[in-house]
Length: 224
Length: 278
Image (cartoon, rainbow over all chains, first blue to last red):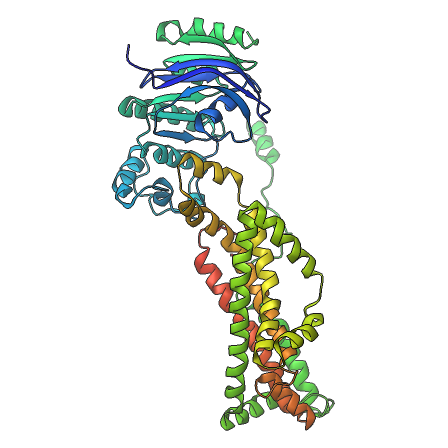
């Protein structure tokens, strides 16, 4: 077996605003799509923020080995309102990235919208720009924090298909934080569940068994 | 059957056009609607002057401002004094503006800077600008440096305060974004901090320009030998109310012109904003 893209050992986070971690072990293989489920306050966002390196306010210990290129997608598209769509995609990249950026916009179905302002786009389109901004960085690990939570049901289904397609083409390792079991089953190769800051389940997704898997997960979340 | 259908037709509701709902909002604004008030005032003033109700020694007629203004222009006095005044206000505004922006960035972007600078500025803010003129005279004399310094101090405060609060209001989520995108300090400043603070700076610049003109009026009446204020003070000594009136009109035009210019710049620079006022 090849070396994992992500390796986390005994990760602990205390004194955070968004829930604690009580010793998390997790490996993610290169190109693997992992969904991270959990109730609110279970530590999902804390784990993702630790991996993204933006949890300055948190204190804790543990080991993390991460790939050099990581991209993050937030629940809000988080586009800078004063930059046009294309400039939002290339933010922080050298000039020569312009071509790839236009290509990434085309991949997410926004060709021709390069010169638009973010406020001229719908919520789903803004989130697709955020996806293009992540893609153009060619990440080895893509972290997504409930990226479709704020979208309407139809747009969410379209975004699922798009993310699935892009992940198959670009093959980054993906950690998708979500509280939506159906979303996790529809998208991921593997589902891990956090409960009270600890890994409570680690399951492979196989199409045939998805109904049974759904029941298992619901039970583990305490709603089944 | 027939009776039935007849009944059916009779039972059909009569169609009436829907009552037009009176809109509760004020309606669509006209482009030049703001001119109505000033024009009415001008008309009132003109009528009073023409009918002789208003003594020209109290307030000359509106057209006197134009004729006297034309005479002063012919003599070359108006443009010479205007140039001096404008240069004074502009240099004060530039000095105060640069200081305001620099200190706002220092105190807005570093904790230590905030502790050191912001407290002092807030303290000083309580002192009216006119009250510091005696000290300014003591430090800078009664010449040109004192005048520019007073204007600079007057313009500094609004520019500092608005820029500083805009910097402080930059969304933390954008800071997180910058970290995940691996922006360096300079990129962060250029793509997030400066554009984020720009609306606040421009607002401060508008207030600062108004404050600069106000300070100009005051300092030009202190031992000046040139400028619009000097022209007005001189006219007052000879009871030339028409020249005094021209001075007032020029101040009004300057203030209004500066504000319009900054607002025009604002619209150009902030096209990304979608606001109610446009």
